[in-house]
Length: 167
Image (cartoon, rainbow, N blue to C red; front, side, top):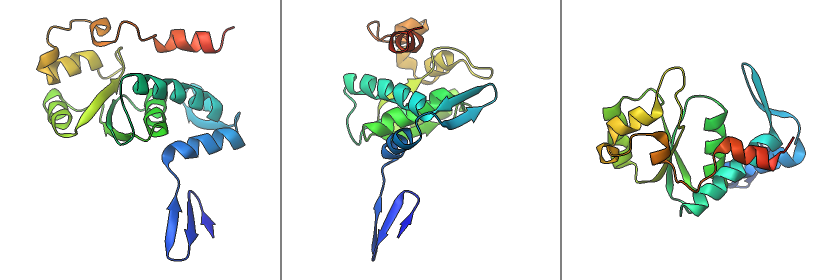
């Protein structure tokens, strides 16, 4: 018997990892919408392409299976892409609420055994993520701009998308 991502076989079930769900969806329905936000639609294959890009970046940073990856982003496509990017390599996603204050964020980061923290360099309508991280993680006090928090050799996501999908 098959029910969603689980296949029941007698007294046990086979669970499908989250990353595999995206891969299966992109294979079966590549151009169907995976997620829709006000003003934007994203197909399975579009999300998969971006998630793979993030997964490769995480691997380049040394993130491996079962490592904890913090994800600090608003409810939007960046969260979905980061979530699936981390899931594709088998890491454990630690979602952080974009409305946490600096004290709450510092506590979670200190106790969640994070290997990396994914976030946005820009400001959304509610939060300046760079300022929040500066306030929460005092060891970054010398970093005064988003470019100081980013790896200089890491491509910006928009530049990477233009290279992957020219035109």
